[in-house]
Image (cartoon, rainbow, N blue to C red; front, side):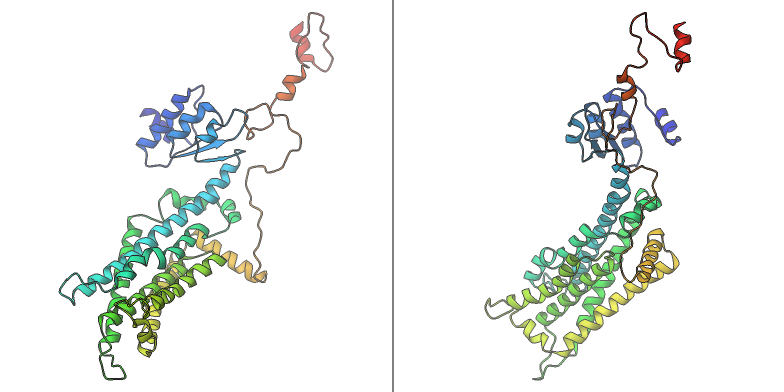
Amino acid sequence: MLLLEVGCMCKAVICCRVTPLQKAQVVDLVKNHKSSITLAIGDGANDVSMIKTAHIGVGISGQEGMQAVLSSDFSFAQFRFLERLLLVHGRWSYLRMCKFLGYFFYKNFSFTLTHFWFAWFIGFSAQTVFDAAFIAIYNVVYTSAPIVMLGVFDQDVNDEYSLEFPKLYTPGLTAMFFNKKIFALSLLEGILTSCGIFFFSYGCLIDGIEHDGKDMVSLETLSFMSSSILIAVVTLRCALDTNYWTPFSHVFIWGSLAIFYIVHGILYSDVFGYEYVGSLRHMGGTAVYWLGLLLCVVGILVIVVSIKLARLLLNSNLSDKLRHKASIQRAKAGGKALTLRPKTSIRREFRTQSIRSGYAFAHEEGFGELITSGRYIRRGDNAQVTNQEPNAAAVNA
């Protein structure tokens, strides 16, 4: 423990002449006694135990073999690629995962708690506000594609900004984007969204009168209107969280809204004889449904947009400022994406001819040429010493 305490007080710790087991023990010491994510990188078989012990193992493909690469989670050819792995892809992955988890909890809280409000009107019986088919395919068909696209393609700033401003990496170290507070906010937002969806739908239909004088409210109409508002709200909520739009994002976000009506149009048709048959055809022809859908969705999303705008104005972070800067530069450039050259301390020039004395491609050019040339090796007792080597002459004398 003394080694851990002293090591944590230093900016860097160098362990010389250690065995593979000792390498793994050093990593395990930090892994078990510190709330930190450990990363081990190596290029040889003697680094395998260290790579396997760490949370994240990185192998360098070099001349020592492929043992480190085969035992690692990530592998590349040169050590300098570790910068991009951490500052670009690692940060993007953390950001996407945090958004995915927050949205996943939000959409399921909004879906589940709608049944809770409905239970107050039915004496807490087993009746559900949504039909069985909608419940079965809600997560699989209706709401999975948008968040998958966000989790795959989304990025707050481009890779060049990520390399130019390493401070963007610090939110991941402090768990800023997903923690207990973020989870509680997702729960609160889900509660308020479900409350708004159910009671707004109920309020639109409770006093509605159809053309033949019958009451508009029924389990079928309430179910269809609530499910329509729910799908529209959670899908557009995902669109608000998307910072980087691609053609796939447009296809899957707007396609999810279209799929909802396509599936319900087929399922509620006379062909299948489902218990909710005719609900889409009946509600789609009323102004109450479309006006209520529009007002409820806009009302919920306006609150979300207002909160986001207030946070940007009062408590913006570095990522928000860089996105604003990039948008201004794109506007000045006529909408074209700007290309910035990242300012990093790592050299990126390519060498056409290089004699390396190390084992991995990541090593710099060493003294291989000097050692193999034999210029400073004595060949017998009659070796001649030139005037250009005064130090060697003094030694021989």
